[in-house]
Image (cartoon, rainbow, N blue to C red; front, side, top):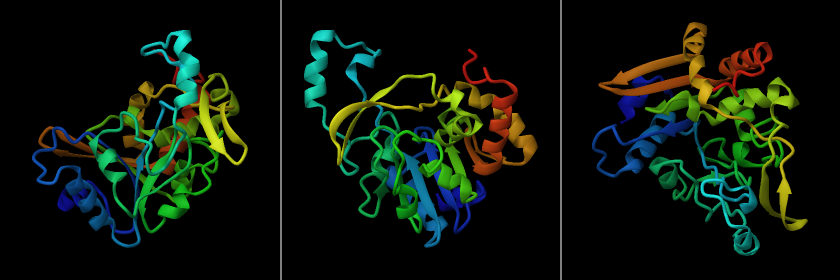
Length: 257
């Protein structure tokens, strides 16, 4: 596995967020542990591996749609919903690599109820501390720190629509891109337990994939193939800057079907 990551462009000392679909990679003797351990070996003592660990289920049940919750159940769910715990709250729909990553004892996880990021490595504490509630993927967030650090994002056979960090472009492009959506989340902090509406929330990601050729032309995206399995390595800062320009030129870009 280590050789595959080196071929894909991973080098010692990098800070890399990983999105993965391991199903078609081939036989892994120890499952996702093999991929995580190989990545950490390549990054070395100076690098940091990050994964998205979102827990989107910690939202107001009145806003649930797949499936909707009967009104008579909503107060019961609110009363019994466990608040976010970085050591216990599962990630939602993030795959086996993320689930396994969260079990590593050296893992650090940011304390955001629905948009946490987990990290292992030299800068794990830096990336996961002080995650702003309303700037969940904006200024001061872990993905913004990765942008400032000239970090990378590796996609293991997943498309750009999976890219949590690209949502930073919406926050940077202007508040009007992230204030039109209403999401209420469960929060427990020094002010108590409550459901609070986020002031900023990103939009859809399905159109991120249309940026692939622009990223390749700009030299910030590299593709490597192992048979029919694709590794995509994205250099985050120029990619986000390009996406910001795209949004400013075409404000409907992400909302277009």
